[in-house]
Image (cartoon, rainbow, N blue to C red; front, side, top):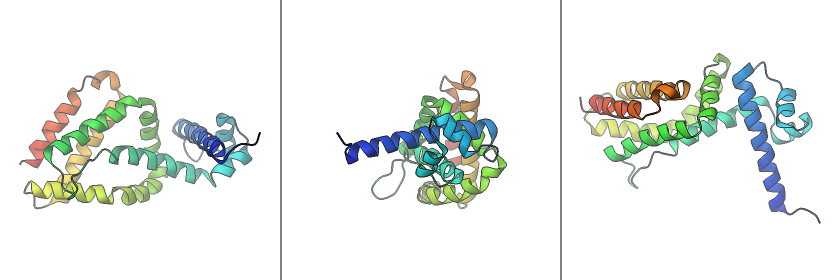
Length: 195
């Protein structure tokens, strides 16, 4: 009995997931440039030709990995229909991001190690700027609503503090798994915002 279009799509999705998972592991372990499509295909349990059937290049795979990470974080920023952000929504965004990091620790540890590779910076920058624009605007408006005259510098301070806490949560979960770091960061954010 021939497969249906739905079955083909399911198989295609599964193979793409295998390739992405294998790539993420290998990129984090060996580095992006030191990993070949042959290694990716072998780890995914498919032929190199089939890997190229799903992705044109390692760069395309890398871009999808980075985009997934950004989408996971940004999808948690709930806003009112008017595009404003309340204190409660801001706190929810922070807490949800910590939950995402804790719930898929393996992915995020590999993701962060991948982002620390200098060769990855260009891919990250272009994808980040594309994905982050709507979120940056919402966060800058939130900061402006708190009376800050220079929302960009306040945004950088808050982002750096949160990103550092996210990385600590991923790299040393045994020290920061009780939720204290997230509550401390929320308090610190509001100290900055209400100053």
